Length: 150
Length: 193
Image (tube, rainbow over all chains, first blue to last red):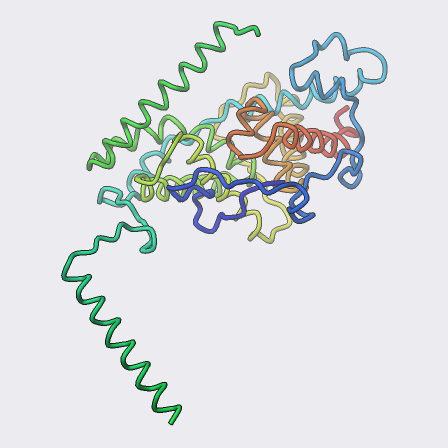
């Protein structure tokens, strides 16, 4: 299983710089991140014929599974499909769009980039100040070391 | 290799839609806040259905959708690639976070905004029962199986689309859908077979 667990930011792992995390090789991933083979079923689950799965995936015509042991499974899924179809026709409540628009910030969205990813421009004055700071710090450290050694 | 014309047209539609999404995003970033409404109208139905099937509660689904679109608006400048896939991930993660946090016995949506299409009261009663039984059965599935089942059966997506949205492989998704079907059938078949 490679569900994105970086969901704390709610952005589904899209940080604006990387669209998808690179998958680690199967062996390196923890056991909990791997798919469990079909042999290990959910508790109480039954095994459906591959033909029924293929029919449900639209790869086989109904007539080919509507015979023998799989006929009962076909009946079951046709019964369930009515309810699934109803869900497929569901639409967003009409008031929701207006509610979302009202809740949006009034200002235009800005690029929110963490400080370590922001562009860093070094001006000559900043470079001189930085170098001077480094010299002072180095001198201070050296003085402290000499003082301790004495 | 055989390539059908409708498939080509569908690909072209995705590209066109993606292009117009990018134009809308540029307008919103330029200060046209109202242009975001077009993105909401375009994608709210499938996102709402997903949230509703994942959580089983219309109120929660509405809240997740609202928060997700607000997040999407705030981070709109960071979109790289397809907007619909990006916003789907925000909603899907919102649902997963809710499922992780919730401690509940059962939540079911007994309100339905959709008009009934069933002919007789008996048929309607049967359907209502099936609806709540299916909800109950779905809540027993692990979130990843439920998500795969909803994407495949309720949203009618192909395995390739699902793999693209979830960042995983077609094989892994087929396995999840198969396991979800088998678990659901085990839970419901005695009553509905």
